[in-house]
Amino acid sequence: MQNGTRLVWIVIPDRKGVEVCRLGADDDIEREFIGEDGSLSGEDVMPGFELPLTRLFS
Image (cartoon, rainbow, N blue to C red):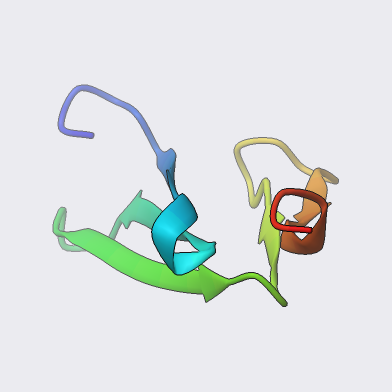
């Protein structure tokens, strides 16, 4: 992320979710876990992209 990556999704099958990592305003990595009932957003990296996690963890 220190080299320009703005959004990372780490799929965690055992937990049926995804850890979302993004670079915060203070250059720290912010982490958020989204469970199987949530959805991924492309945020400002891929505007309009959305993936309901039920499609991955059905």
